[in-house]
Image 1 (cartoon, helix red, strand yellow):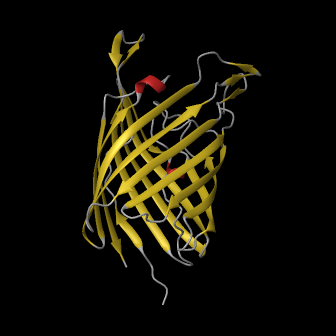
Image 2 (cartoon, helix red, strand yellow):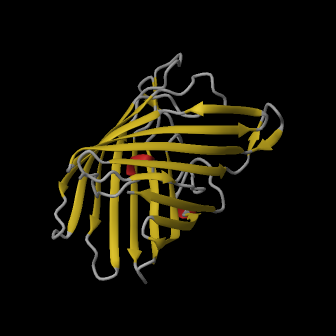
Image 3 (cartoon, rainbow, N blue to C red):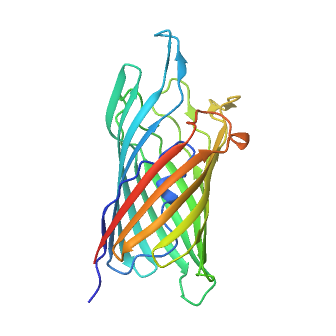
Length: 277
């Protein structure tokens, strides 16, 4: 009998502009054929304050988010994933809430044998402009973007387990602008390593981030519109029982190699995953 595994609860308060997108949220381990995988991610983030000339004061952007992910295995080496990002944003006196841009992607496992040193999956995805164009502050940029990526993880080497994930986004044009404006393409990555100290406790260190190219305004590159942000994270994976995983974590921006945008001093978080067979 085929096993249906659904992840029914995830509570996460670690979000930030330096984090990789949901496109790189999963390892290269594939869904089994006809297997569902569900994931709910709750998050909170407040960026540093910036000066608002209209109100004459410094304001920050506060975001509460909930990403709903559903994956389905069409074959043992091929699955599709749909991510629906919900968010509430507040910047000064302006508030918005609703659905952001949907993300749809597929994963194809090209190396999945247990005896191989690496498990590898190819990723193909797209962002679709489903957010409201009247939302202020904006919940997403409402561009149609296409991405290609690669996910790899080592087999367990003693107590160590490593992950490498990377993707390149071909970003689209901003809709509704008087002058054609293309958002800069983006490279994103995840590098992390697990070290199991017992059957129930595994610390993990991760470096995540993105590098974005300049925007293009009617064929002209816009100076100082590029950006890159990176986070160094430490988390502990605790499995008190086989179907429950609890992951407290702390992230610190790597400011010397980040540029553009705003970053908080640190990001704290907690994930709680429950698997029901």
